[in-house]
Amino acid sequence: MSELDLPFEAQVNPAPNKRFQETVVFVHHFGGGLRTTLRHMRLVNNLGFDAVRFELQFNKMELSNLFPITADLKIGARNIWMEQVEAVLNAIPGKKILYSFSMPSLGALGAMANRHAADISGWVTDGGPFLQLMRASNNLFEHEYDVKNPLLRYLYSGASYFAFGFGTEVSVPRWLEELPKGFPVLSIRGGKDPLVPCSAINAVFNQVDHLALEKLFIPDGGHLDGLKKFASVYEPAVKGFLTKVGTPL
Image (tube, rainbow, N blue to C red; front, top):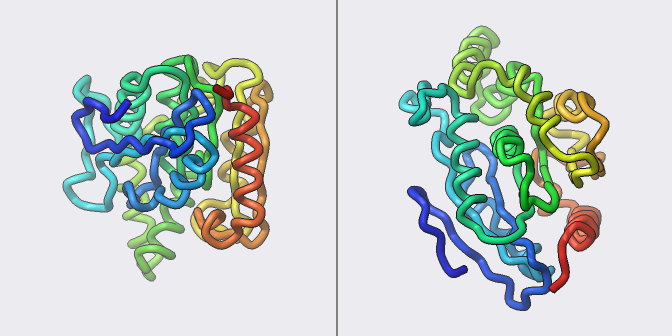
């Protein structure tokens, strides 16, 4: 597998010494891109996993992104992301592991649910998925976009919730139920995350009890900075999970 035939940018990163059947598929965070998963890609490559990264569409706070709609007329960025993740999963032969970040983790969850997690050996999810979407959006505008006016933050948060897609709170429990019993998940959270509190992630996973859920809690961790700032705890946890769920060659 040297390249993928997809209608958006995707990159295949083979392991220098392939030791596992699975390909790790990265779903970067909102506002991120190929480069923001580079450090994580190198981690899994060094463990012996091939990796695939791709660019999410509707990935920035722009006026042109306020009305994302799919080809079958589903409104919301989460539906665009679900379609993209599904397209990538369908394009890659063999077993896969999903590795997602922050809000687009909901798109990753929806994509897995649509496929009943077929050929998915496990899921690493960092800083997401999460509910309490208005709260998280308000945090985003306050801490990332430095919007100081509370009323403006509320208005922007409402618009971003519409752009992301109504009905997420209803869809999440249904998506989770589509994952098989004992499906392995490693959920990574930061205790000092200014955008996504642990309670917002718990609001997702507390809805079911049939997953094989492991948690990595980094007390001083912020948003998605675990590998960069706390590698001594992040790397062993990810390595242990991936090598456990991966299929040796």
